[in-house]
Image (cartoon, rainbow, N blue to C red; front, side):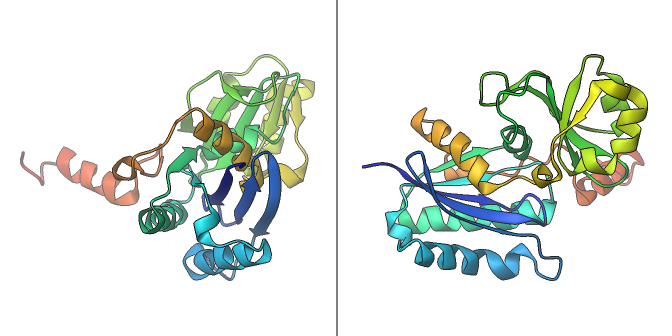
Length: 239
């Protein structure tokens, strides 16, 4: 029987969940609602989608989750929910990054794919991928940086995807001109349905994450960690 995966993405305000059976997408729920947050709607959305797909949580073979980078609060909610469901059911968990999910939205792209996600503070989360063979293959480190710095490292024609690419489109075009290409606006946020394909591959490869090791991929330090580091630098905390 084909594997049933429940994929969860809360890395951006536009969160989504999807259910796949083998290589078939059974259902997806995608909501970009500014008035609600993941804490308020995630469990209800999972329950609703399972019901609409005539399934129960016990039908799920494995849980998949987008681990980040992205919204610190959103990631914590998503991972905590998946961890709780996995503990309650005894089912395994696999993970994938939000940057690779966005790259997966442009399979077989002829140019390198630069994913840019708004990280606020005039920075972006970014990573460079090759998607020529279908699934994304990382060809550069994930980073959080000034978008000008990201673009300055690119010389060849490049396809940009993500809400950061939309936000900084003028800057990108100014620096790269005709070498800059942009994915459609519908690919500005990760989608759980795209994550499902990568998560299924991870599950089949045995890349299960032990629950004690399941943690968000932030890349950037949290505000609390930054404040802590500054206090140490200023000598307020003695080793």
